Length: 148
Image 1: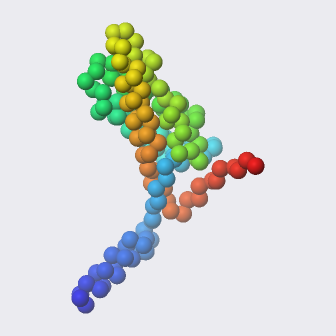
Image 2: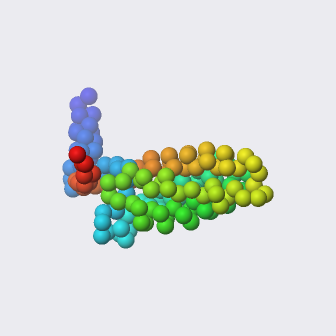
Image 3: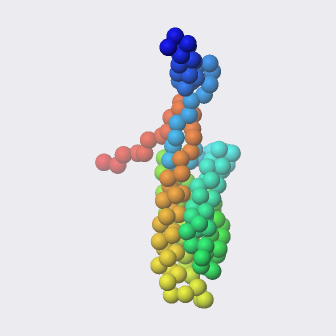
């Protein structure tokens, strides 16, 4: 037990961020404050979220011919929407705006395409919104303005 105490103390110091190490928290938005949307961290976060959403289409509906079209459309629309709609308070609300289904579900896609695509889109939106992004624990996220 005596040998384990120093080891446990060292582990706790390491986990607590001692010795100059940085602690990180998780945030379910992207660090894209006004005026800094072109930062590498903002762009990387938006790209990761868009790729996660596109990956849902690849995984969930790959047995349908139109799925590749939907996945490609998601990956094309998403960065465009994200770069204009993302803000630092956002929990990735912009993920809901992306909709590849209308362009994917055209003839000869089949009559069930829109229903299946819409279901998969819901999963993609969920994955896009829920993708956590690491930020420094000391970072102060702006609070949303309260409307009275």
